[in-house]
Picture: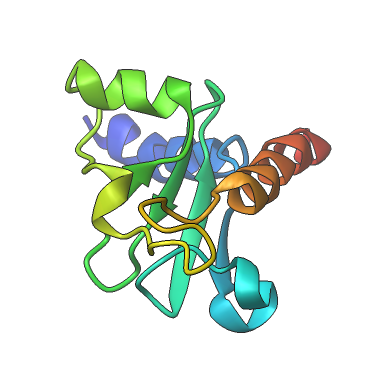
Length: 117
């Protein structure tokens, strides 16, 4: 049992290097492309390619792509609909702002997660 407790911290630390980083982005960085009701959000790329945006004050996550929506649909993650935090597009009535810039930024996190190996 003592050996298990001795090895546990090393196991936990080894998994931290495998996880993709989470990046905080703000309205200031994206300007008129900003799509969210929050001034700042976190972007997350999971190892399976699922992309999420996270509200830093509540830690609620919202799916940014089909993989993430599938995880949400099958209750594999605790997430809410992205429409909850999406702004309406002022230039296109009855439409939400584009999430494409945020999908690209989150995908870049996936690309960088392999750099650590």
